[in-house]
Each structure stands twice: as structure tokens, then as C-alpha cells.
Amino acid sequence: MVALEAFSPFQPLDADDSGLPCAVLDYEIHNPGPAAAEVVVAWSTTNPVDGSNGRRNELRSTHDMSGLFMSDPSLAADDPMRGSFRT
Image 1: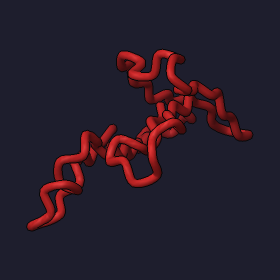
Image 2: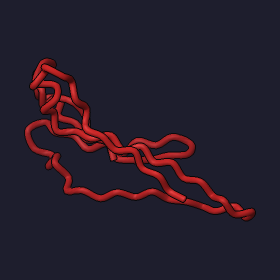
Image 3: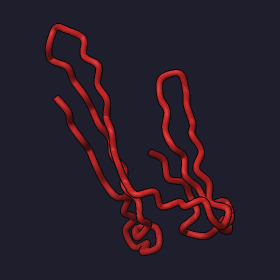
Image 4: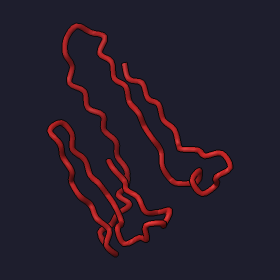
């Protein structure tokens, strides 16, 4: 069984924070069977970071997870488009 809770952050009376282009996806996977199962959750999107103008794509890994961290450090710290994109 797979369950997904998905939402886009919403701050009442705060148009700037409520309008940020982001979504949170929280997957819960439950195996009701007696045998172990290997599960992979995959997601695909167009890469919004093209490597020009200081944009970066960095592979990050831990002992049990890996992914691509995309950022644009050339943006000012208070720029609403500054942040990160993780896959």
C-alpha cells in the first residue's frame, strides 16, 4: 500500500510566502505481506538548473539515500527564488 500526502505551503494573509513555487510530497509505504519487499519511489522533472550563471547541480549521497541537489547561489539571500531544489 502506498499513501501520499501532498501540499503546497499556504500562509494566510501572506501572498509572497503562499505564492512560492514549491510542493511537499510525503510518501508512506506499507507492505502487508509476510515477505520483505524492496521499494523505490522515483520522480522525474525537467532540470530547472542549466549550469549557467553560477547555478549548480550536486550529487549528494548518504549510506541509504542519494539525490541531486540543485541551487543558484548567485541569487541574493533575500531573493524569493533563492532556495534549493532536491530530487
